[in-house]
Amino acid sequence: MGGWAPSECIAVTVKNKDPEKDARRAVIDAALTMSRSGLSTGRSGNVSCRWKGGMLITPTGMAYEDIRPRDVVFITSKGTLLDKKSRKPSSEWRFHLAAYRARPDMKAVVHTHSMHATVLACAHKPIPAFHYMVAVAGGKDIPLVSYDTFGTQELADHVAHALAERNACLMANHGQIAVGANLGAALELAHEVEVLAEQYSKVLVLGGDPHILSDEEMARVLERFKSYGQRAQR
Ligand SMILES: [Zn+2]
Image 1 (cartoon, rainbow, N blue to C red):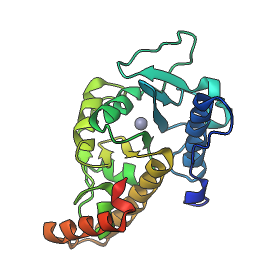
Image 2: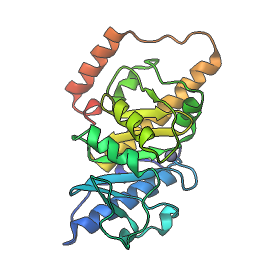
Image 3: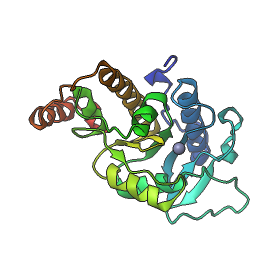
Image 4: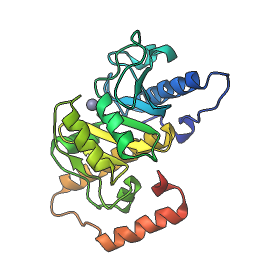
């Protein structure tokens, strides 16, 4: 995982008179950062941000390097494309929309098939409190949602259910999804989930029962994260 730094994350600075174009650029920048940091392989993964009555999401089937602001797709909160000439959205747009519905406080969604999160997801292993940093996802574990075919409303419903309680989850036989108050926060959380997934995979490889922190201890950690004002607020 080289090349990723929080400073690369996107602060949406309104430089020109077209804030929608800035938001579209921010989605592209987040997708590029995700790809260059090794968080997503090939064209897997997708990024969106909440935008006026809906969301802006990466298009399907395009290399991130080739995406221009006009290629980013606007979908209303009801799931309709207003611009009939726009590109097709990522086939996974339904769970992005479901995430925004489940979490009115969140403004960005990052979904990736990052290596270690996907390995755990394929082994159907959620991430328990093997390390206190698991609280970064907003609870005492990082849950795993049941498998359903990509792009389906059923999968979107599973994701929405998990994200109502957490800021990130694993998706069985698929990957991971993280939400944030902005694109940078969602990206950073996806990165942290990937690091935790790698650590937990290695703990499992050592064998034996990993020592899991108690619910009481995790409640204490979550409280501390809140008072530090950084981690748990995403
Ligand atoms: Zn996917």
